[in-house]
Length: 301
Picture 1 (cartoon, rainbow, N blue to C red):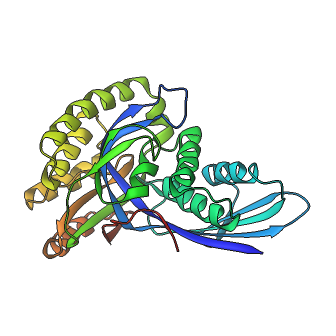
Picture 2 (cartoon, one colour):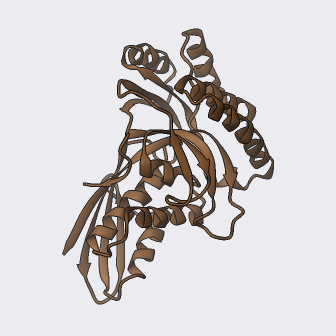
């Protein structure tokens, strides 16, 4: 029996621009900007040699039959070895799933790193990350999440593509900042990536606002431009609008995680409790959480 464990940070996208025209899946991706969280996905893989391949995927202690991205990653790895394995994947997801926190990308990325180790394939960290990127693109669950989670920090993705092909730059940020989140649930990534009118709005706004962020790459500008992106693309729901109006009144710049129905900000520690107080007034059926920022990116454990 072989086993390995890896971690990938969750990620919140504030603004982005779609680049999915290339035929080469490694060159599909997005430009954009976002923040990686110390909350993320820990993945353990257990391999036992068998007469034929099989797969079990568990998420937070529950067996699932709907883990398309993880299945895609496992199939790619099993195609690279002549041996047959019973594969058990255990994902521990520390953020709301499917709610704009990059959980599918983090699951794919941590799984890829763990499988590379367990199978002793000797791929580089970037090669393993590329497999995760391709799985996300194939399953239409993300475009730029994996490259952001590979490197961590508050990033601007300045050229689209997988890790090793796309390019990003970091916005300097001290470790005293925290990411404060309120999540109501999902907005559908697949629908958003295929809705023609929404894609046009995303690309028009993404291009304009990224140029402004590149000219003044600061945390405050990231938050302001992320808010503009959410406003101008029409993604803000009634629940989110109510919270955003209250955070403005309290003097804190917030936006929404793309694509999730929720609100987030990045604040110094002394502002965490005042922001949580606003969020908790509006929890409804949602949940709040606070995370440190992950500056290391995905890694083996």
